Image (cartoon, rainbow, N blue to C red; front, side, top):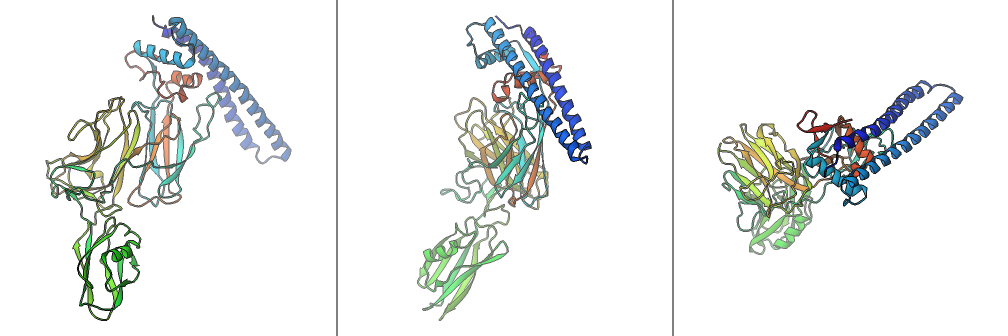
Length: 526
């Protein structure tokens, strides 16, 4: 058996015509009363008190219209249950089960509702931080989120990693003014990074040319380089027998000085003093020689662009010499190291890290990138099923890949790139995050990549956009802002009406199939 969907839709249309009249009436009152209130703002206290009574009467009318719309929703609910159970008495007599069966029959009969046109864009305020805010209006199946509300969401940063989102005034689904804004007001911080060693701070214990926890496909040290960690030496000579010394270093334009060290300080004592300085918490020290003539080798893990150590010593004899064994790279975003891709017009080098992800889940992904030189090529971040394997697509057949043309990447500072991945219902046994030259870079063209971040994305509200703040090389500051603009033309009035009538707005995954107006199949519209 099959439900006569055309018949069902015709009955719905009659109900929705009544609700449309109620909404039109409410919107007209709302507009006209706004004009009236503005007109009488300078009148006497008595007149303004009378206007207040008018506004109270308006709220009473809204309440009555809301009661009407709730009653109409009940009609749609009972009509749906009756239509489905008359066709198939085996379906449970409840809205949830009948809605599932109704949607199944829409799909089986290739009947569609006209879809809404939904889009989302972001724009930055005048900010201290140079990161970005990205947004997407899709659901976990990769489909456009048809019921995202048209509004402007303001994103205001409370610090480097926390922001607050403010939506426009909301209205309940039974209000005559629905759809309005979301009313969202939520603090958000990015969730846990699922990538290990995303800042490339440490090297692999076996292959020092590769970053720890990453696999390299390409020519290590030539076409793909794990930029080095700064290594310096402090050499005590002349056999002092008494005295102290202190080490000084410039980081980020500021000079830092260690606590006083004995002339014969050991590696652990020097390391402890250095780790007490801001930005040098990950530094390590090894020593050679015999006391007191030690050569201390200092590895400045995690320190961006350190200066040369100097010292102030007060020895009875001897001296201290300073040298740089390995110069760190200046091309880093926040930490001490990055990955450098260098082109030769053909080799498509890549790095991989295996990740554990959930099916039908939306993730945000980001990186910081900077180029040197000019030329063709592109850098991509994607999800693949194996080394050199196939890119994962979501259930809507969209590949999980974010590709950036090299020419759009800044050559003066690291810029944030990123977006969203949506995993399919059926996952492969292994999943890798890959960063690679999706189009081979031109000879002598280099791109530096740092701070890879992958986390489960956060939704502003149910059926709304996913919004994520991506840190740049300069952190966001208090009062930095972004604007997220969601547009929805609500052209699919049938599905918009079903959102309030059957509460599909709060039932993710219970969407009716949609198609653009004029697409093959029967497009139902009120």
